[in-house]
Length: 378
Image 1 (cartoon, helix red, strand yellow):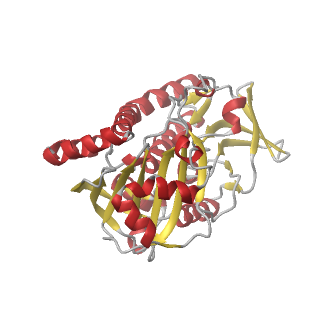
Image 2 (cartoon, rainbow, N blue to C red; image 1 turned 90 degrees about the horizontal axis):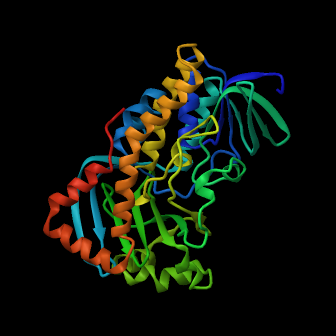
């Protein structure tokens, strides 16, 4: 493999990486994709996908319309004190587990000729003489284009000396994500967001008779409860009456929750040392906006076209990088900033209580905020 030159190497087999690989393979390009896990596997994720990406996934070959997935067109939001509002979602979304979706995309990618290497962790990426060299698990390969689609954080970020990893560590706020699949009696067409002190929890239906219950919390909540998740849920999350009811009544389908730590929302760059960054590797929207997955797939749609232009000799590498960075900023930068603002409003107990009270009195403002965090179909 060290003598082979691929058109594109993709580091990370999440939604951005898999959908990019499929599009490039459809265009006749030789693609290698590195994934450190083995499909199928669960991920810490809210598993609500806005409808902006529904038609895109079906065009790729995922038959969403025949999969009996819940269509979600209603939102319920509560403050820590239990004050709540319910609004219709204009565009809405659908629920599907990452276990099912990622595995389906991986199978589709392989069927289209993508060389998908599972349980293969990339440890080094270098760029020299207009060519990338990727090292992973003792394997070395070369590619004309390389893309980072490995998610919110990776050891590669440190090796690439990305600026967001270098800031003041003491002032940086770190979050912990926790996810369960549960059985609950809730409307299948509704996504619920429940705030608690320094965090929020999303609940929505996925395929089958199960719901995704996923929450994000400031790491200090866990530290203050001896790093005991169950104790933190009792002492912090259950102060919200809705979460007290749901966490008490749920039938848990995991023996232990899935967790991810050291989540940050620092500003990142869409191009780093000639690598095109997609999804959370380029920038993370607040999870309470429910659009990170659609943004990742939309970035793959944008990148695939620009990469093909470059590989076909219609643009230079500089043009590829500049166009991708500029178009990425136009599509996502504002949404990420708005998401951070909304997360700030719902990140503090008093602010959350106040914000829900205001939004109940001015529901058109709530609808506007929802619309500003959603994109158009692509």
